[in-house]
Length: 341
Image (tube, rainbow, N blue to C red):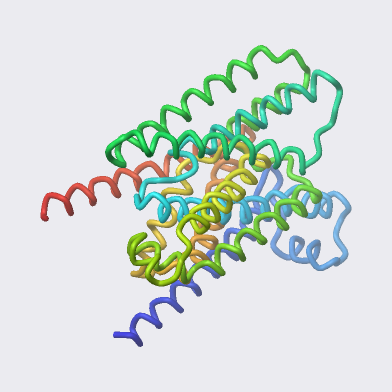
């Protein structure tokens, strides 16, 4: 049985890695102007290609593709951490309203800066998003002590998300600046407009948080079996919960700061990875969720760019189309399990 599990895990990671490479090159090759695979590889390796091709690949498509990969992975890992924290498979940064809180904070910061002629750096955007995420998370934690079951907590999170989103839309609507079109596009969720400075910032933040999440895999596995069990295994529950909150907030805040709100990826991908690997062990699911989130976001970004080209869909429109059925499936599965008990 152990040998079969190991084979399944290895095969799962090989499948995810190959799929990441496939969508990586698909996103580079296809677009408003198609570029051959040969020219794409030549541009990546510094070969002799026309300047226009080099600029399209290196300055536009490659940063966008890397952003979808990095931020998609971050969102999925954040969702898995939140699901472990709340002990619920449909907990996620978008569902719980954490992404909406981050979106509101960033939107207010952007509107203030635009009105005063200030250009916000990537660091300020991430900081504003992180503060918004922590405020939303704080409200959810306060509610967790008041409500009686997880369903009510999820509904409370959804309501927080709606309130934050409505305030954001109101602020965006009445913002009087010519650049407000870009703000509106960001508020709908998009990987477009990413540059190499953004990639450097998000890489440092996401991979630092990812490594930290990977190193707490063992206590996280104990925490999944219950707080009492984890405490008996020597886990400092209060400190561990704070670490979980900070890591999930940093990851989701980074996504919102650079790409706006991206729906359902944080909920759907961890569940799909558990089904693919046949386990919920954090040591396996954390890296698997990162790869799975990268695949899903690159695939959805590809659809968003290509489906109605030259018109581009928001990334959340596509992720919701594919992610919402997975969430419905999770809830139906939980109801069947409860009914059989």
